[in-house]
Image 1 (cartoon, rainbow over the protein chains, first blue to last red):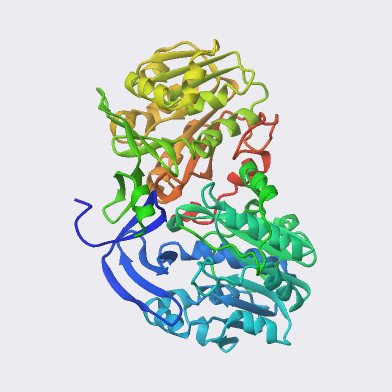
Image 2 (cartoon, rainbow over the protein chains, first blue to last red):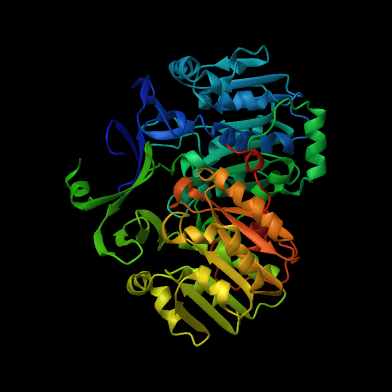
Length: 304
Length: 280
């Protein structure tokens, strides 16, 4: 019977829950910032949950991380200096470093213990990228880093947990924060933020992020990708200072792949998929028209 | 748990296991229908996130809130790629969602062949679109075996939609080569077939196997994808089959009022992610 044994339940709402059978608990505990659970599941492989919400699963973490990183990196003509906010598993930096143009990737994560746990229990995620000579790891509040830094970046990637009321990311999705990111981007700069579920039940946050990026950046391009282990279409918002990512031709992206010595095959992304990501269904277009601006005074806190 | 949360908790839980190690659990507000037909177990219950949910032999077939993903993506790519569809055949699709989408077009006739009258009867009560479709004079229902119908009928159609359930149980015959050879014979020139093809996550080897025989039967056999949050893996695969009608040459605008489908989404659905060529 499937019901036998130990299960971990991830509630999407009070009315809909997902159950993962626990093959083995690799790690369970609290860091100074959040609850961390790494478990082994027969279907998904290793799975990481932060504060009870799935972050990535071994079987398809590449889909999520490719969808987060490559559209923004390909939109930039020559990304050399990249900032990753969050991304504790190390897989975001791993994808960034696949672009041969990159000379430096700075990763700012508040939770040093989480990064240590991930390196130990989920080494496939970072794949050595956190020890790469091009990577600079900073353990501090991203808000503090972004406000204090004098450095300028080509691409900024926000890979944070959804803003739970007591979670570490609550203030990092706001018009004020996005404005500061715009300031630390160079002229061709590109920003991308993971923005949660894009299905009709949970799309409010994604649509509000899109509206907020749109207020701050010359161009906002919301897009979605399908990540099986999340069970939902997933939302991302790309903000660019110049150019329209959805207008990049397949040939141009193919050329950029070549120029950047892409050593790895894609699991999800490809030059043909790039443009397709930006097509939005009517239900999301409609909701974006109704979405509200997220500000520090009026934050969007994720509720179950 | 707060007292208010305790009071709002659903009374029952319906568990759908996709494998031994993973499942999705629906809170059940009320059980609307539960019975067994000659062919399968039929359950309908109300859930606060998904609305009314239809389950056949333990697997979710449709939910009120997210049915549009699946039904729009099975119907509209075929209809907008065809120059002027006048007639349509539905194999399966007892919950009526496919019929509802087709009747948005000015077609002359829609015939549905569903094997299980009990699914139609139960759905009619709890999915409001089905009863309005049944009152439409263009619609005709035949209770019978879809595989047998396409083998024996002389009628031909511009569009044929195969809305089968999983390839176990009564839908087994709707997933083999002989069935599709018969379906092809029932197609007018320029006709298009669209068929549900399973989850790219759970059924990938099966999809590859089907695609290889479909490519032998049809000049054009292309897969496309779209999300369906309540289905295993949350995303689904469909097959577009024709004797030459190109899925990417769109001939018509879709009808107004759709929630998921538009021309951009249509083109994007055919741009398959890298793993669809190699498997997960």
